[in-house]
Image: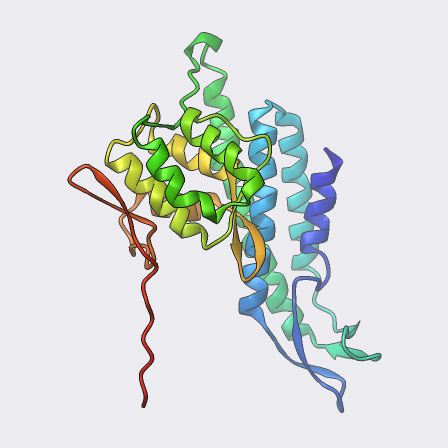
Amino acid sequence: MEKIYIFIEKSLEGFKNFSFDVDTELKQAKNCHYGESNTSLFYEIGYIRKDIEIIYLEGNDKSINRIKQKLLETRKTLEGFNVELLLKTNQFDFYFMVNSAIIKKINRLKIKHIDELLNFIEEKVLLSSQQADTRTEDEIIELKPVLKPEAVPIVFEIIKDYFKPEQQTALKQVIETGNKANEKLLFKDNGNRLTDTFKKLIEHGFITGCLKQDLINWIISNFTFTHQSKVKPFIYDTVEKIISRKGTPCKSPLINIEKGQIKKLEQPRTKKYNK
């Protein structure tokens, strides 16, 4: 269990998540790339959030409370830390100054992510734990998304090439049974394309045996995806936004369903225009 405490510290300590533009003559930070750093923090916090979900499912409330305390301690440290610092560059063999204004802004960004985790623990984990205590064991039913038999070969043929050949057998087993894969299956493309596919299948009745909430958790538990050549986890809020809400449609969907028929969509062609 100690690994999650260490991961929280490493994710939020110092400046490992942040990149700077450095004035090599003045040896000062000119600018911090907050947007890129915010994305990096977002994904790392997603890993922590997933670990918290697993700990909750194991019924380990004591560990969840320890994580909460660790987050509160880290938050307090960040609030009071605003002195100027000397940091060493990765590209050049010298130290550069990061002023307190930049440090304060960085710390506020980290505190925002800590608060999101604390809210998640309070609203979804601890609250759910209290509700679960009121249920008897035989009232808990595992709901798994199961693809209708006639849809399995069609869907498998459409999405299989987005997975490594050695994972394709496991992929077929997962979509046939709704069981959890032994290890997460890597979807080699943008995650919203896979999420959009499952959304259409459940909305048109090709996925049965579960609610959208169960489908969201199943996707998170079984799949990862690639973004800018990096393997990324599915984050609850992102998957829930696509599955459960009416928002911006997927720009490059894999399937369309018309008149009860699942159709593969080809990758849209891009056109070049001369100015």
